[in-house]
Length: 143
Image 1 (tube, rainbow, N blue to C red):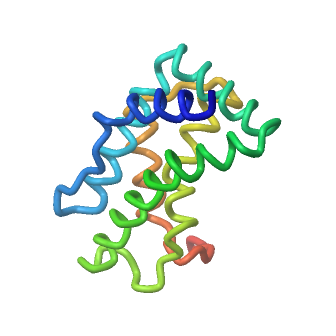
Image 2 (cartoon, one colour; image 1 turned 60 degrees about the horizontal axis):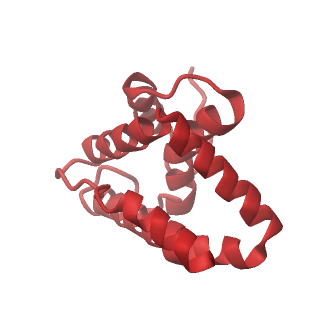
């Protein structure tokens, strides 16, 4: 059962490449557009919610999802961030895992928790907010 679940979810992600446009903001925006499009499908949101719930009850499923599904996707997202750092678009001391969370977390929160709209406009605003902030994880106060 576990292998079937992981394989089914992997199939859903085959057509979900990590963008490499030569620009971190453009890559992040394209990536979030894909996430938003998937989270606009009520059936996919239901399945994601069910997988999260089942994973909370079944440590083997949670581990399998992290190892075979989430881990590779997160590694690709971190590589996208690394390209942005290498091009000087992000600070050298960027907190990569936190930046990855800042990008995708709000979309999943809206879709799974608050039930708010998840669309391209929200994705653009997330990227703009992240790019205006301090990618090292330090607060920036406007004066």
